[in-house]
Length: 360
Image (tube, rainbow, N blue to C red; front, side, top):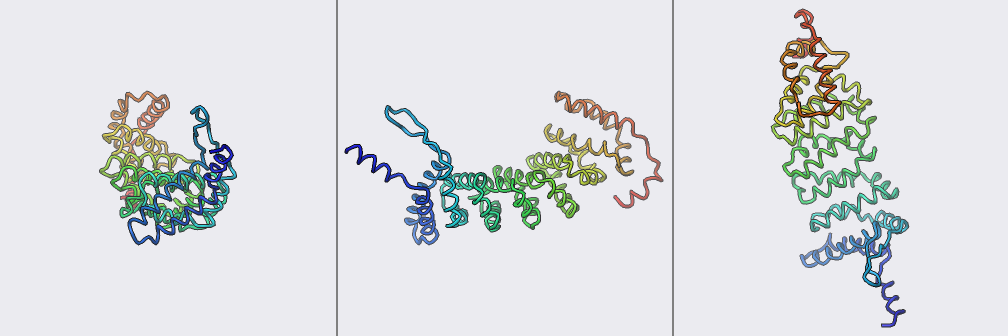
């Protein structure tokens, strides 16, 4: 074949971004309506091929050139922009997400990658997602036990989405938030459970202005539910929950929430028990929260009484506590906490009667 003809065939074989998206959209339509397994299989094969072509547009690829030396085929920003515009105009991703359960495992990962890349880099796609909350709710529903086949990919997409304050606000002000606390973080699949905890942590710490408002409005309901996670028999649940709680309480925006939480005798007892957890990592996180109770400048009398009545046992317990943990800050903090406990004085019973009635 003459070189000119070979080059022309190569150029014809390389599709434009718009053509790839149109082909993807067309085959998704077929997949939705496909009456037979054969048609589903055929459509999925075309869709998988489109995924590969889109990934080349996004991140480039290594190609073999003369002499079998690899040469980078670098991505072009204008191609990514065209893809973003076409997937928005053709509503590609809402169909992809709803049909994802028909895809092989690796293709589900590709969907999450393509979605996250566009959400992170292309404003037109991000604005499209934000303007269509049904996309977010469809992704969130991927955590539900009956949708286990797509939970991992949906988790990856949601972890990216909640980095945006509008998505975080959307979920924090919805009833769906409570599903995270009573269902999603308790799932038995480790990857899905970890993803749900990651999303929950982002919702509660990444955008402190809106999470502070959430805690003000829903304090009792949230911390009652979250304390149940801290008391779980499951190590993984306690491990994630203790770490998230510490990150919640130490944010400056959450100062009022921290003071309110550390002023509760019930909460104090939970963390005193967590100090004795079988896991050293849980113990360490528990210590970092426990010290907030001890350092509370507005310590209520019933909390002070509990600490005072247990101060000798706590000092004896904390002195050798995590002795192998040589972090300088931890050693200093532990010394300060022990010093504070030693300085506590007995509180007359008469000073406790009013608060005891309220808090028992």
